[in-house]
Image (cartoon, rainbow, N blue to C red; front, side, top):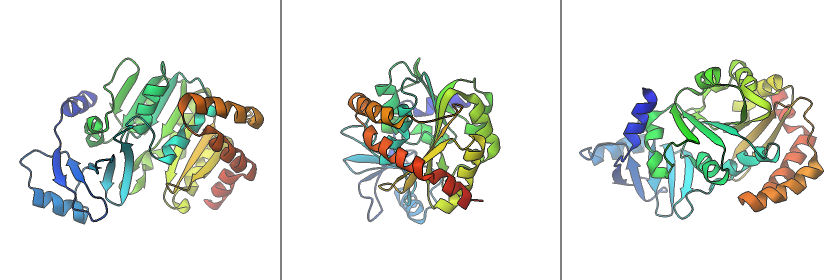
Length: 300
């Protein structure tokens, strides 16, 4: 019932348009409001950050998803809406170096749908499921040109932790990009969830987590991942976006073949258009320096 309501709400939805009241983020604000809504009240709520729903800013070149103006969630180029505009989303696709032919991908945290759109277009034949808790985020899917559900794609309104408890085993890649107004989704930042995620991954499945904010805020989560995945994790930074990406590997006795991966990265770059050679170079360096382990120790 919840899923059906989310679909109905997004189908043909007309968004309320308001000139951006922000000094830096110029353009048009797109909002989930009726046409008779009062512009002055909405403008005031946006400025004092009391507006309770996600909103979109369109500057004519890109569209951005916000929870508040200090926390940009997604970016989409209007000229290339199926590309990955943000560097951290590109690096989340680094799991393909280790699992190049996935059959099932699950994403917790839809946002503007950048990753799910990229996978839908560039990875034919892969079963894709996106899980999003906030129905208002799903309601904005048309604004970000997210394709309708089909035989390969399913977008569910659900709690990510509850979904993982109930889903069948065999997920090849579980990507987590789940934030609310205060930071990383708390229901996913614990050992119980990570243990369930480990159990639902395929034999050589990969967990990928986008980490944002101060390192102190997610060091404990890194430690829990290292515990559940038996220290088989690699963390890299994304200086452009201020994020870190954590990859955790279920494969027993995981041992990257770095020379082979450098060659494989060139093939992936040719096929998918992302800078996989730079990704694997950064991964190898981070792995040999033990960055994930260092951050886990800091969080104790």
